[in-house]
Length: 151
Image (cartoon, rainbow, N blue to C red; front, side, top):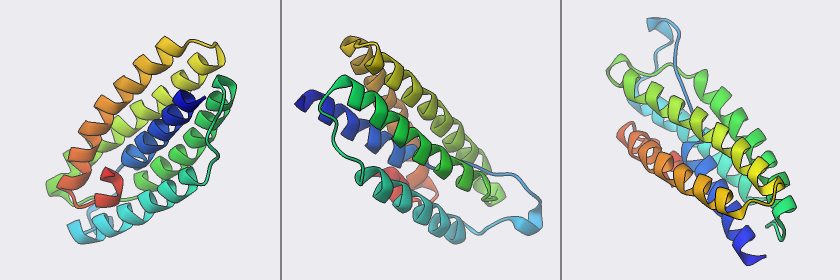
């Protein structure tokens, strides 16, 4: 199903764009803005590469399975991002980016469930919600230089 393929592609893009996360630790662990951007870009590039390697689904069941695989990759990216300690000046934005990423991870679970239930309308609604969250995450990622996370 072409529509299912497009949905998994959108889900993968959501994961890549938000597929990052963040912050904690002490002042000695804080990264500079440039260091944070570099490390976040590496994480997001990996998430992007791994999600793009997944096959396109042809059925809702394949979409459900594929979304589950995207979520696993995405969650690993979030965990890696949480290891990073942003500069204090952008800590709030970075933490908000992580919170949005975590919400997008929840949406991936919901999309998988809706696909498994055969509920195309709910899948579309959830993808649209994810796209709105993704736009917010993209803006935040760009604000701290993580361009790979805003694609």
